Amino acid sequence: MSTAPPSNTSVFGFQSEQIQAEAAVAYDGFYVRQDFDPVIGKYLRSADDIMLWPLLRKLPAEADVIREMVENDDPAVGFMQKNTLVAVENPTTYNALKTLDGGQQIKSLGGVINIGYYSQSLWEQQGRPYGPQLAMKTEKGMSATLKALERCLFRGNATLNPLEFNGLESLIAQDHSFVVDIADGKKIASLLRAIVRLAITDEQILRGVTHIFTSALGIELIEEQTDSQMQYMNLERVTPGLRVPSVITQRGQTPLMSSPFIRDTPADPAEGRDYDLVHYWLLDLNQLSWRGVIPKGGTPDNFNPQIFDVSKYAYHAGLEHYMVDKRFILQFGTLFAGNNGESIWKLSLKVPAGTIGSIGTL
Image (cartoon, rainbow, N blue to C red; front, side, top):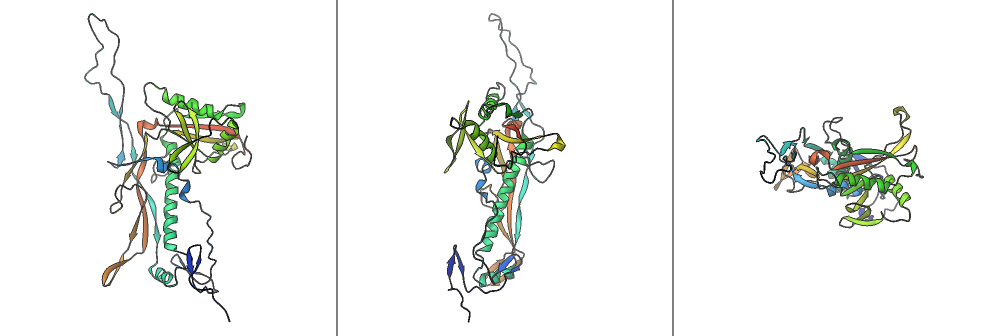
């Protein structure tokens, strides 16, 4: 005679009842109980490491293609005879503003989770085995969307894939990317400070550096160089509850943040590169923003990906109800770099081939 576990046994917050010793069966994406291990392994990275998206300003897009007006140049001025006051005159055609060419088009991101109505009914009747699967599917769908969003913020390329928006790699201004070999002892913190100096000392273009993003390896390299000097190890609050190291630059303490979505470049002899590249992004977040369109029916003033339930079926049981058969995650928008990408700088460090993916660095 077999015995079943007591009903309503709580396992990791889930309720299990009379587990049967047979294999689980999938109906339209819902696994219904027969026999299962109540411990669910989690192998996928969650959205906890999304760093850049929460820091971006979110603004409503006023057109399908986002462009900007910029100050072109100053009017001509100069010294003059103080007795005659014959001054340099500017023609009536002088215009301090110009429209930058191109622009960034609004794009759409998201996905659909299909929900079989019968399978959902059976799953509900069996006491939701394997936990609240619909909620977990939705959570993972939202996490996947946020991860795709963060990847595109750094590496998006609308030329290679017209459906995605341009990220930092595609928006950076010309002459803002530097490649340096640190084998001869160059200090990474000093190189970062040098780029900040270039950014803030241009007398024609107003810009700065508010944040530095790099990979986990980039953090490790600068830790090895600073060692006990600790000039970089001051902690800076970037969001409530989150403190990160900071580099002391000409603008004070500048947060140094690690992102798993920054992809360092391994050596490739076929391309004539016998070294790895580790990347640092120096950004002025005052000039970077997300220009979004809130989906109709979505939550007002919320530019995050939003969830919609979709149905093509309806039934009546006293009141009208709908049989949800799809859960839609949707977001409209694009990354926009003000001042034609002058807010973006990149430092790439040459390190020995094999440094990426190893447990030893320099």
